[in-house]
Image (tube, rainbow, N blue to C red):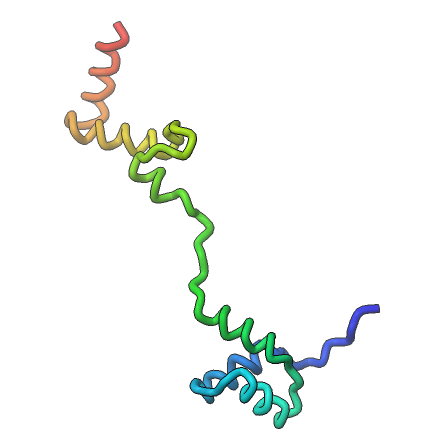
Length: 108
């Protein structure tokens, strides 16, 4: 059977206590919250403290490599990198029309 929720968000209470007492050690945060009637473990305080210092990731780790036209780890250029390379080539020859003309001449 699942535990009944207490109605108090312990992590939020820890963040609030750390905001009010920035120099307090995790054990002191536990004591402060115990005085307010919120029971938390020292480990949870450490975890919340660690998570508060991290930046959120965007989830797009290879975006820089693709935009710059760099090869992936298998040596092949991805689709996004190929588009970036073609755009750079088009701007170098004076536009997409000139690039298409060059590509047509090479095809023949």
